[in-house]
Length: 602
Image (cartoon, rainbow, N blue to C red; front, side):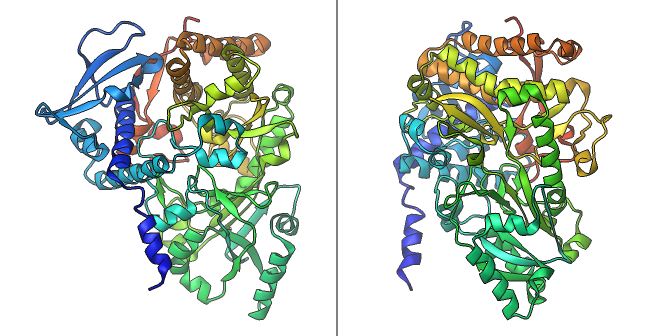
């Protein structure tokens, strides 16, 4: 037996010591109690009546009355539970017990409403999330002050939280322990892509209007790679003009394609070409890779049939077909809008796509089934082509990041900038929120602007503009009366009137701002009221600049007293294999009462 498998086997468990595992469980249990309380899945009871912004001691009794959790917490705006980790304790029959995230799910099973079929997979996802968190804790990672000075991809790999709201956010069901070190964003290992030649009878390549297939390949593959791939086809007596070159994630090739597409490979409709030379790095979204050797080249997003955070992360060849046309249309829309141009708000276009349609799976299952999402890829522009020499790039997820000592990146950014917190937040909100308000009110256009989907452009550690990515599958136009060309027509989504503005309330207020407000209050003593005042000021400034939308401001009122509480963990607990239908995203949302709007009276 060779030494490498033995070393890899040992490395797989090197971080699983009792102390690190206990720390990982403690962190995740704190998050579980906070987010499940936020979504009203559980209801901790205060031991004494809490005053407005003061902390209080809370007790949670599980379905098993012998098990109790006790902790001190402050419930802030948007019912954000800030739990003080050092105060959290668990008892069983009054005796201290260790914190265990998997046990907590089982103890809360009745309250969570998770079904018998979903529970084992959810427990596996929780355990995998713990495994990942323990690995990050053992590795240490960058200090927050070092993140401020790190480069774009160092920051990408330094992110530890995953999605801030989802509990089971690093499940990656399908990866083994060697895959974890090879393909996860936190491992940041160099990845080389497998390339195949896909016969034109099965594969469809589409691209933006500013390029052709040959031009696109010339920009993304070294000449030596293109020559070597063509020679391999010629050596088989095959004509390269009958094929389209496409990248495949190495995991997907070994674990899905060689088996499910074995007949296509035998018939030479799918021909293995080898690895390209450039090294890539996995991004937070895991199936998207960044070119480390040539940063101005495109990201590559590929099908990766692992279960992660509510979906099997395949990629649909049917959706891919229309991706470049949709991105070109949105890009023209944004570039033709004077306000958005002034704010510098842009997208990273998905400029080319390719999908392979397997006739057997098409006959056996609908296009939405994972069997028909195993072999597709797209190329997305690099942000390095949109920044000046004086500017830096940072994932917006970094604003929610705290290091191993709980120091925040946003706090360190403010310290390293020439601005105070008030002024820094005003600049950030103008760069991020103002363009999204305009897209909504001027164009009925909504994105999914969570932290991982936004790249901030910084100057002197101050955000000056925002770049939006992940367009084709996560954008919608909430107006079915508007005429849209070709593939763009699929963006028109039917959304009930009362839910339209929820895209702003949920995606910005609840999923980004409540965390930033909490971090600044906890770490810097910055009053939450002051944070929400900055948000209100940004909204009012936009409204004052655009009186032509006064009727829409009234109809979709960001100063309404309350809004529906949309619950992401409830979605995952209900169906952790497919949380929502992309063709009807609003139809599957899970609500639990309302949240008081923190800017209603500001």
